[in-house]
Length: 120
Image (cartoon, rainbow, N blue to C red; front, side):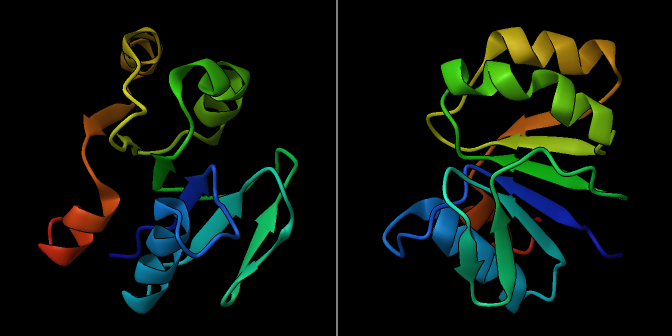
């Protein structure tokens, strides 16, 4: 099953976990979309700055702290993903409730660990 994934908070900096996640997702043949504060590319994934109405997003993986996430609540919900991954440092009880009300699953996990243990 293809799990088209949106990396939210994607960084061009190769030392950032969001950058590593994009690369690892691509290595696992997952269709990656990315939104960050700067446009550019990570390998073949294009980083956008704007809210793009992507279709068929299975997973949103977050690399934004809880305060920055507030600007994205409605956007993420509008994508109707099957799940949202809250990577370490992105935990957000307020957003969990909103997702639960929309019947969107969420987990607190590390995308890199999920991929390396075949649990993605």
